[in-house]
Amino acid sequence: MRGIIAGQPVVLVSLAYRLGAFGFLAHLDWAKLQTRKGKYKAFVYYFDHPAPTSPDGASHAAEIGYVFGNLGGWGSGTNPEDLGLSDLRSSYWVNFAKTGDLNGSGLPNWPAFTEPEMTAMCLSQEPAARPLPNLEKLKAIDAYFAWRREQAHTGAGEEHVRQ
Image 1 (cartoon, one colour):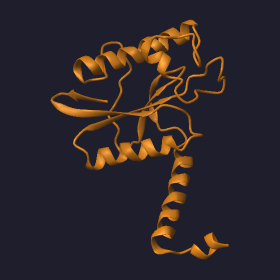
Image 2: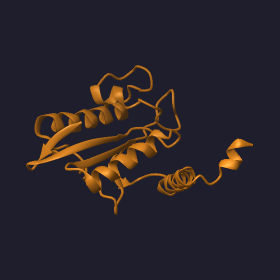
Image 3: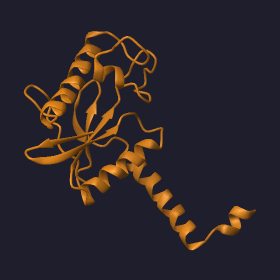
């Protein structure tokens, strides 16, 4: 999703669900690359709101009903907390669509993603901008795949693959 903030183009990056899917790492890499090389700012979110079907935290695509105010379906509840989070989500999206700026009156500030801070808007029971959850685990997975790419690039480890 793209928009304009203070005359500068921006990009919204979805880190929509809890670590447990490698998509989270890929989206994080995209946010880092956008920050380093892209023309647009990146805004990252992490949705981790428990629901009746997922009491330990959000599952893949669970945030969609909250964005569109369509609660009560798969993965969402209809209690006051759910309704408040849905209003918050849709307010950010409406602001972004209207002005290119997610932030607005009465909303927790959503800062642009930067690599040194590695902050995401955590949309959960207590929405706020926070350091990325599970960052050490993400770094460990990233280091492993960097090692695997290096092995593939140099041809090292091929004898293990053939066995």
